[in-house]
Length: 123
Image (tube, rainbow, N blue to C red; front, side, top):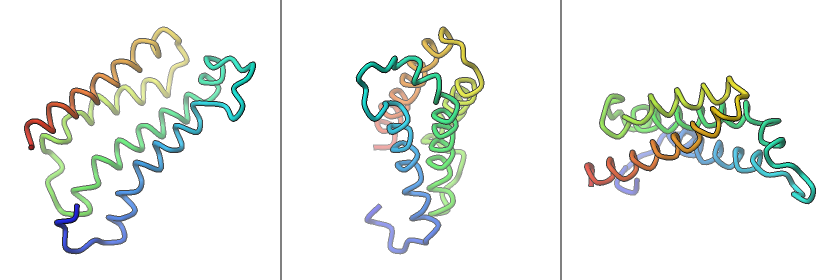
């Protein structure tokens, strides 16, 4: 990012948007004082907002470079957006513990593959 000579305020806000969403998710995942709290129940009390924030972070992260720097939206670096968004919206819309147990690791795998493959391709 240091090679970009000029930043817009919108670009700066978008750059900060995904980390802010991830911070909020981290705050919602764990109770303030974990003593005696059933973490699974706590998660399912907050799952909808957690996964909507996850979808928001994905959307902001995908749109950041096209909006801030004018790069194309449809590029290799954005391939994981579609499955990640689908998984986030499914997780936000269902309370099925079994589906959450399957899709949360699947989302992690999608993000990990995207990071490893895209970083390797674009580097």
